Image 1: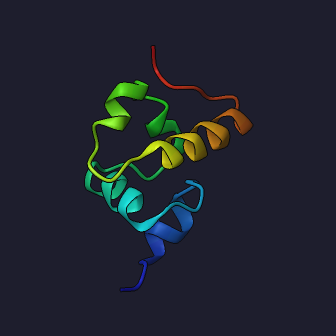
Image 2: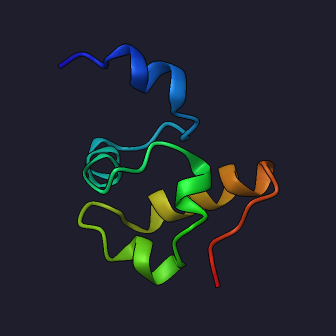
Length: 70
């Protein structure tokens, strides 16, 4: 399966396990700013998002001054 050019140029998500990538893609999420629009419980409800993915996303967002929605 190949990534299309849009995924390569527009996504700033960290490298995640494939189930987490699919979960975010199925939710229409391709940017950290979109992840930051979710609460942590909302993110955890996505099938394929586990504790490791949550922590990876938390760190990537923190590097950009972002955090989960309250």
